[in-house]
Image 1 (tube, rainbow, N blue to C red):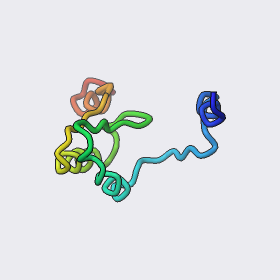
Image 2 (image 1 turned 120 degrees about the horizontal axis):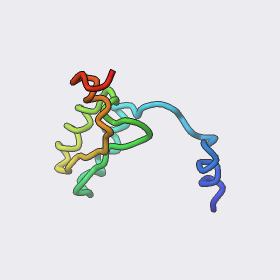
Image 3 (image 1 turned 90 degrees about the horizontal axis):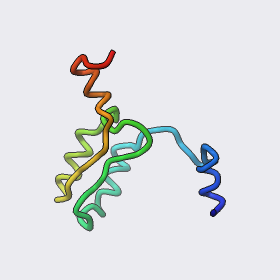
Image 4 (image 1 turned 45 degrees about the vertical axis):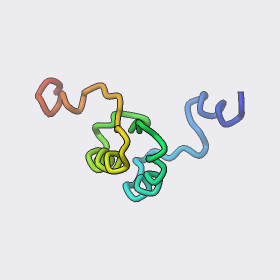
Amino acid sequence: MPAEMQDVHKGGSVNWQDRDMKLEDFRKVSEYFNKAENIVLQGWGEPLLYGNIIDTIRIVNEKSARPGFVTSGSALGRELGIYP
């Protein structure tokens, strides 16, 4: 196993940054989205808690790709009064 993977497997990486991607950085990488049919908006954690989720979905749509993500629905549950 490569050293980088061993660091991640042990629970972290020396280069890990615990933060959300800046919207301007997302716009920069979006220039490559026309090479894909689907763009999965996923990282570590719940994607619906990302403050710019609507903007990122719009950017993906503008590039003629289909946005997608996997969610536990916990953010929706709070909005709907399902979870405390």
